[in-house]
Image (tube, rainbow, N blue to C red; front, side, top):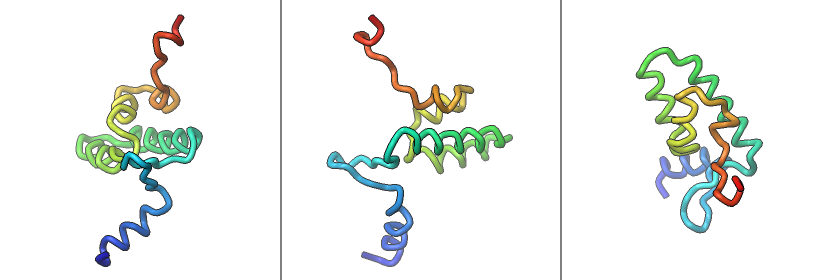
Length: 92
């Protein structure tokens, strides 16, 4: 492994955990995810220009995904942003 890859591996070792499908599992539980998304929301609230929002998106997109970032961008709370949709069986 090259020096750059080793440094990246060391940096991400605490947060990046690939699962069997190859996708990353970044958070151990929903509380950690909510805390992280609250931090993103505070960054987003402080952003005042398109380049700042674009940089924020690039930093967090691979960690939380476009759906959560989009929900935050349109003004939803962090709790609502990470909530999963209920299935039809849950609504009845």
